[in-house]
Image (cartoon, rainbow, N blue to C red; front, top):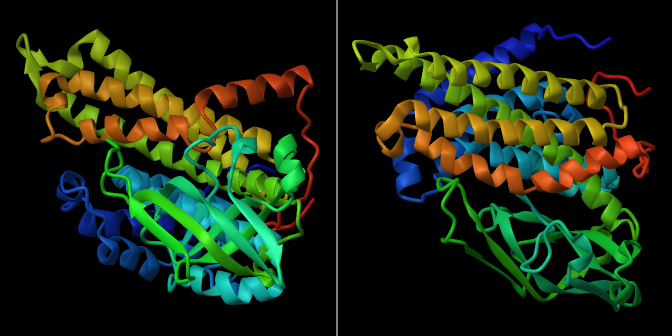
Length: 404
């Protein structure tokens, strides 16, 4: 049964992240955003100490052993502070760690997942390229098997933690004939380490949102990848990439819900303090309408990501539900941020108030991990019968839960 009541441990997690954020992030985040600076020690150090970086990884692999709902709670609270913090969870915990937990073999879990879950190593994800976003078939990165290892060449772009991560989950073509045919059964997944010869990375400075986060590119020039770093089997790369997106989209949905709440709270506070025409602006009907819409969107988005998290907990296929949660929450966060700026009026256009930062940050999530348009098509295809709910490979349930 889908239970909406949080456990004592989940309530404690929620309160702990809030208190840490109020103490360690809120006083500094505006300056970090202004300086386009990723504060690794403050952010990653704090998240590691709280056990967030391996929150839903079983204790046997170095994690906190909590469930998917706990992961969602952490993401909602982190994005309430700033989107850059939730992005870390999406990439490190969702796209990488939980994918290794599902698809990696025991040796890969011990070598890579354990230090990642403990926060000793940071993980990234390499799917997007300069010419390949929603169209994964357009990937150009290749991995050619040679003398017991793979030689990898290519470039990945718009990579979160590109200059920070120690390990990357990278999707590349291993079957060159299928690459020419754009047949995704020729794609494979690998673990790549930053320190290997031929790996280079750099920041992307042109972005106008999530400025306190690290986003960049990395290149692979004849990087030799050991055969044991192939995840799953050759040809399973597309399935692995889509499985990873199920995890990442879930964290994005929960995070966007936190952004809606941040917009709501900031708007309520401002509407009670600002006066026009002799009354608080909260007394004006159209301001009330915008605030009410934020509350409606927040409650609906929270229900959607929690339902997806429950399905993950019990081991049910959840691509459809997770995609719906991501689509709704991110679009709703864009609406909430726009209305929050409007409620603040001229002050909303000033960096002295947080809503301008919310507005700049919200747009990215409407694009990455499946654009708004891609998710619309997906949901329509499910209803029309063009897309199946049948699993290709079942996810591992979260610790302490059952598979059905």
